[in-house]
Length: 316
Image 1 (cartoon, rainbow, N blue to C red):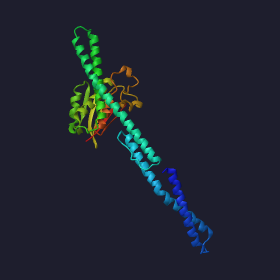
Image 2: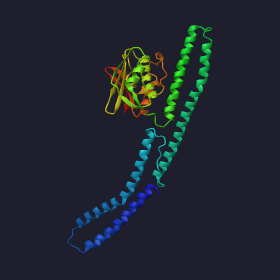
Image 3: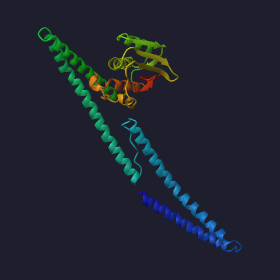
Image 4: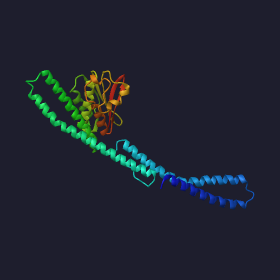
């Protein structure tokens, strides 16, 4: 039944009840001639409000509960749970809205899954021609111009890194299972990664978290790569323990980025205004946040003493 019809019938029923109660009240008070007229009017108005309120409340409350459940489903879907659906109740406008939401959610889920599969498959298929190209470059080392050969090797390495990051990003999106749970010493892991770079200063305390050591290593490596590409030495890495778990902070002495771009740098393939003078694919920091959130944490970029500082929080 349509909502307006239900409200109309509820109002009509409340008026009928009010009319019956008014007639009964008038017959009762008619025998008491000492009751003033304004008292009759006040009693009638109070009775009208009470009857309409008691009659309309159950209908309004039922509709409000259904709208609350619909709101919860929309919020869950917006938070990234693409399997969130709303139970369809009744046959009114709210029910039709729930049906429309479920249909739209299913369609969006299908499109997102198709996009993930396409991205993963395309990235995987690129591995074979890249391997052949690398083999061809190695075979022609003696005959090709050294400068051109080095440039080609650099291009292949950059493309190979891009494919690797796309594969990892699509895998993190597509796989909804829990990540590997093992004790990881962040300070030891950071020491191993910092040793691969020059001008990196590591400090902090030994903190252990539960997670995937391979993904956490990639998180640290991407932060250090970002500092090496876009910053200036020395790069500082600080590991600290917090009440919730662990905090990783990485900053350098480079020019940093504009305050308006502090959140944008975590978007996939985002390039800053001066991207023409910088290398990179624009996926490194997006993977940092993705890995952190898969572990139940998060990644942010904030200003610290006038410099950009990347902070990653991880639960115990």
